[in-house]
Image 1 (spheres, rainbow, N blue to C red):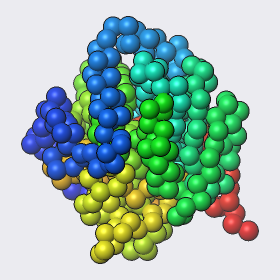
Image 2: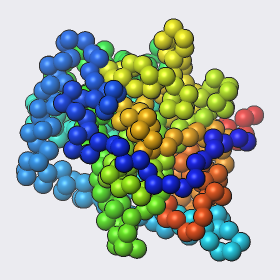
Image 3: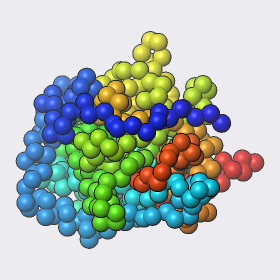
Length: 419
């Protein structure tokens, strides 16, 4: 199997804008981001941005949000030293990477998605929006949205591609169990892109009564900023936990990237720390030369999708190329604009992992640590194979274990035993 070459260890670029200036007043990260939406949605986006700025530092909002993160979600999530995984990648002389997992899989609902869903539902409540819609691919964002809507008694509609509904049947049942209506989307390939498009159509039609809880750092401004801010708790806790464990910073951050919320949630706290290397892993599907992959940052070109300018899988005519991944949460042809910005600056590195490599890592973490990861997370775990062999000394790696793998066991079983 081939891997994208990894550059030697080096100090990260310091040309990135300070965090207080990302995005700018137009909602752009450099040339990326913005608002490419119908006029009917512009007032709703402005209303959401105003509400976010009004409540982000409001003591009452923060008290409710932080209280629920602690008592309902179960934060802080642990930073776990993966001893056997570390031993597996140790070199003959005893040196090697020290591998830690940020255990977002231990959150209520089993992934990082609940952090953002909870923050956005508190905004929706204050904006007087009784109807909530969302898109979902792997189902984790849908489950998180259904969960917070049940908690606050709000009407909840989840759009999900029919292909994803088939491979994530457990999460579909969980959403319906909590009172959400799951609407199948048959357009296109019946995956995350199509579900997102349908959710946006709904929002255009019902904008006065409806809040759209977008699940990733994609979409029009202010969503990439808002989702990032609600996910930044991941990196903030990681910094505190690293300081408590060894009195310093991590050397390398590693996370999977579909739309990119779990990665930005981990990275954002450290973007201004030039010694911290940040690596995002995309879905290589059946290989970058197969045309069946979702490696947007690796193989995409700049374009506009779902309201924002970013890297995008598209053909010579600008038409979206359908992505492929065994992981429903990475099966998306676009990526959050801040990731595109960090890529172009060289502040973060992005590589890809194939379906087979992710499957191998899924089994590896299960057998070495007794932790069954989401297939999305397994892509990040798989990158340890090429990464660790090229590292010197004993660098500390923090991997965002963004979700647990209960939802994926049937997909894995079918992949391993296709007959």
